[in-house]
Amino acid sequence: MTHIIDGKQVAATVIDAVQQAASDLERTKGVRAGLAVVIVGDDPASHSYVGAKGRMAKECGFNSLQHTLPAQTTQGELAGLVASLNQDTSIHGILVQLPLPKHLDADAIIQSIRPEKDVDGLHVVNAGKLATGDLATGLISCTPAGAMLLVRSIHGGDLSGLMAVVIGRSNLFGKPMAQLLLNANATVMTAHSRTKDLASVARGADILVAAVGRPEMVKADWVKPGATVIDVGINRIDAPERGDGKTTRLVGDVSYAEASGVAGAITLVPGGVGPMTIAMLMANTITAAYRLNGLSSPSF
Ligand code: GUN
Image 1 (spheres, rainbow, N blue to C red):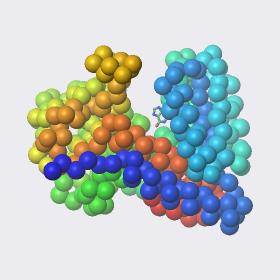
Image 2: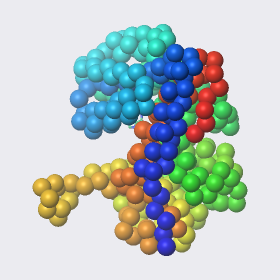
Image 3: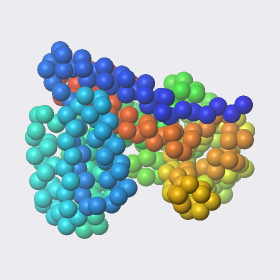
Image 4: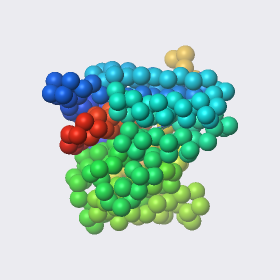
């Protein structure tokens, strides 16, 4: 029987721990964790993600601030906002929602966030700590950190002897995911659009992680029997057949209908990695708040 990995349930466990840590911090130090989310422009999908982050931050007991800037915001204006959030002692986490409008240099903005407040884990200091195996003092990108908790829910913390294949090589996901898996002793391959014969590379994986942004690309014959499949894709596709007034639906990068017959464990879309991303953003925020107040952070 294929095990369906329940991202909602694992995320709820993380959120419980964050709520407890937030209330402890407030009780013992009088400090309320603060998360500032910055969004530029009016991309509806980005607004919906940012709204969900803000709602969850409130549920965790955080001071949740959203800065909504117009699409024509200049580099200087955005950099000025980040600089003031860097200085603001009531703010422990800063997230600038990506993508930014084309005229803005996103990397310069991300690199201007104080690493201690970089709850996205995208600053080179945080990326470098992860790359050198320092998982204790930096902040780790939320989606890979969440996907890793799902892997751990199946395999435990030691992946010795297991082959992991990550399809996708972005800074936001593929690269940090590969490093987390390597750090847990897996043998890791990072595959991508230029990889020759992706299907046979994927079929070698005991742990297959797909983050390519191509709807249902991973088919049954890409999956080793019994493998753990983590689907990071969120793709909206036309679904005129729904017949409930809606004409689109969300699918992952994995064909669930095909792969679930072969995998040993598999995530759903939605309800798999998605809830983990927000949970780990909350975990990073409370971690940053503890550290910025000279306390050792809880672990998740
Ligand atoms: N856009 C899509 N995912 C993310 C994320 O994890 N962080 C940020 N900042 N922007 C995103």
